[in-house]
Structure formats: C-alpha cells, structure tokens
Image (cartoon, rainbow, N blue to C red):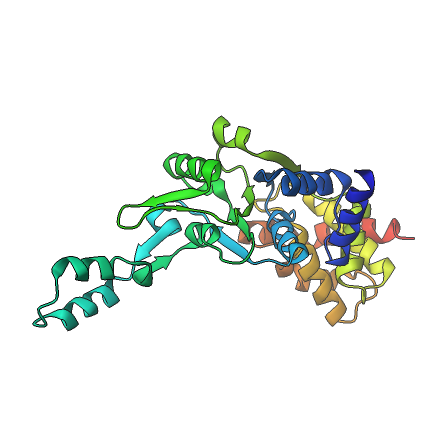
Length: 296
C-alpha cells in the first residue's frame, strides 16, 4: 500500500501537482473504493486542479458541473431540444403520421440534451471523472438529489425510463464552505481538507510549475505570500494567484522581489479593491524586506 501511495505522489507531481501523502491516500482510496471524494478548503488551494489531474492520470474525460445558487436538477441533468422537437412536429404536419409514433420519436435519445450529470452516467467507453465544483453554492434540494444520484448512479427520465451507468464515474466534490453541507452527503463521501500550503510546499509548487523562476525568487514569493495571507484580507490569494504572480515576475525578468515591481503586479495576487487599497506602499516594502531578509 505504501508503495502505491508513493507511486501516486510521484505521478501527481509529474503532472505538476505537488501533493502531500494524505492527499494521495485520499485520492487512492476514493479510486479503489469507488467512493466520492469531498474536498473542502479555502478558494485557490488546489481542489479543482486535483480532479483535473486525476482525470489525466486515469486517461479519461473530466466532466465538470459548476454549481451556483439556483442551480436546478433539470439544468444539471438533461433538457429536451425543444427547437428541434418543434421543427420535427411541423415537418410531420399533413403527412398522416401516427401521433404516438411522432411523440415517441421526438422524446427519444436523439432529441435529448445531456447535461453534466447525465453525461457522466452515460459515458460510453470508460469511467469519467465527474467534478461537482463548489457544491456548497447549490441549495439543499439539489444536494438531496445529488446524494440519491451518487448512491445508485442511475436516473429516471419519464419519457425514456431508468438509465443506469455502465461505467460509474469517479466523483470529486469541492466545497469552499460558504454553507455547511448535510451530514448525509458527508457520510456518502471520503473527506479531505486542504489548507494553504506550507512555505516549503509552496516553493516546490512554484519550482515545479515555473522552473524558470530562480530558487531565490521562488522562496521570496513564498515568504511574501505567507506574510500577505496573515493579513485580514477580503480574499486571500491561493496557489493559482501565486503561480500567476510568479509567471508575471518571470516575464518581467525578476530574480528577486523589488517593492516597485511588487506594487505594480499586485493585481495578480489581490482580486478585491479593498485589499488593494488597504495594502499601503509601506506595507509592501515591509513584506518585501521580510521576504528578502529570510532568503538564503
């Protein structure tokens, strides 16, 4: 078992995803036990990227359902192609066709528009990875439906009957904890909580994704981010912002942090006006000085 976890860790890192043993273990168990994996944590810690990397490792399709307030079952599951159905009805007018045959034809799979959940169930070749992103943004009713779907991997469409998955998907659900998820959904899943990376891990992530960044710059960026996240921000920068900022600094040919350049590129890190206004030039200078003093 330990060797398999180490292999998975190496495979994740080869895909540019630096993970910890706990993360690799959760992914391995979810894959082997065929249980959904619920990943919680702050925005930008790598929850969504984990599902993307898993799909690449498995050599299968990633099917993503982005949740939002007001998301209904119909939108997430299927819809009928009403314009084509209406066109087919008009073409049938005056031809003396049996109305029952027309109805059966326009409510067949040919006129069914599969949305992410149904696509994950009807995948023809192999099990896809179904990413239910930010499930905490959906309401309790949708969560209840999702629980039922994940239990049996089947849905009933009144006009077509029950559709069962021949290749049940691997499921990853992510949550930013904007609301508390129900106990029933939690019990159905394996659970993983992801925090902002430690300094050493963030430096590894930077060096893995942007090897062009010098070691000194990567470490200064990591230390700067550690100090920045300690401040009372509206939106704390995640790993995605770290990588964007590093790319910007590499593009500007920076081998070390400079206060002027940092101020000019803060838009890569801070995505809220109040955070940008609250961080004064003296604050930036202090964070840069701390990051540079502690660099090797």
